Length: 611
Image: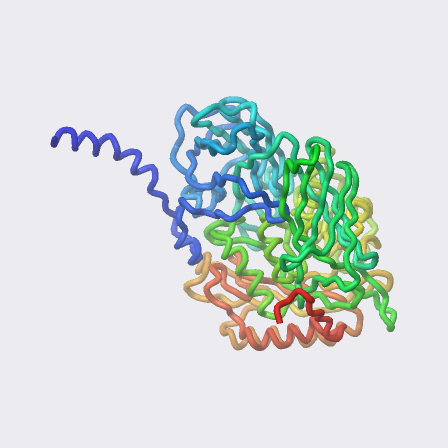
């Protein structure tokens, strides 16, 4: 018996060791990261705008290897990586950078649910940075290029009974390439952060019928009392959209596939706003010969983003045909332990909830795109979003304080193709989320090119949102607004009488908090203070200056920033989200004054709201 017992121990030991995941390195961790269970990572449904009951989450421990480009699939893998955290992230369990001349390989096995027989199986990736190739059981099922949007492959024909082998290859040149990359660099410094390579959002399987609903495009029209729903399908039939609220039917509409459905909404419909973020429930179904073959759950909001000249001649931003001063935070969306990926859904929601509690009504999502659930949380909590395009390549000289009419930097045909392709994919991905209010194709001349053409294309592609053509410059007379940046204090140094004038960035008050720093010996802010009291006083001074500039022409403003990020210590919270650095009550009070500066109380109680 002893010999048998010893044999079991020796045989089992290597496999036991493979499952012993822990965060890599000794960097700062959030409490969500410290509590992370690798067997239960990010288990929430990943696509709330189009939900099906059946799906399977593939997050968890996969095998990985890093090899020189062109080496082919490894004969042996190096160890385990926790998906969906990037290779460089502590929570991946690896914590190393991927070089431009390397490839990252992933491998895992999966089984299908018995109830999925005779179904088509879709393999979904929330986002992978950057070039992705995928095989199932040695059969190549697809490729994708781009780091910020979801993609899926129909893998049905490659599947076998029992265990199926999923293999993924990723390459990512980071700042050695011209692709959109946001603030990622190989050598982090200043406002530039650690690179993110590989799978960084949820991977999941979804069974569908032979004919199924593939996407939704939802557009509210509050002036006509119409909710427009465009449904893309695989296969033909009859579509039905049912709108309800609090379990009560509101309206419905039917059409043949390929036709836009226009659902009539009641005259007393509930409007969505930060004060009252009312969402209608949608059921979208596909019918063939009187039988429902596919059904998805969704939601929508009745709201309108526009601009209009006020009584003093100033062009103002409006929500639901009323002037609203939009005041928010510059939100980088970075985490000390997960980098691009929040360690949990609670963490993902936390920053939005705090921003709301501090009295802001808007977030500028800065040169990054978030998982779909982030936008869902903004929808349900009532937070307007300005969505940046992640920058890439190089741009011309930044001419922030002038209307710059010089020659813009020409991007190569390849670089321009990558930009246009990913920007369109981002807009398609986020189109139906009602919280998106502004598209921002460029920031501070980073990769800026053909500004007037890009702004015009963006507006034509989605007329339902406002377009901020270049936040902070270079400035061209196109789009819906002129966006100024000024640090640290607000300053109205340019004004556009034909468009809304906004302050796209200001502030950056720095306060280093011992025990909550990415690098204790190296950190900075645009201005730096030693105490929360002093930092709060400075914030109140800037907020007061902003209040005085609103009657002079500002229609929106963005304070830098939500949290510290790596060596930047100019967040309202520390990087680990453990400490709010400013007096919350004082900033909430003045923030609400700013948000209400152009309007009376616009809160409209929903008739479906509980009394």
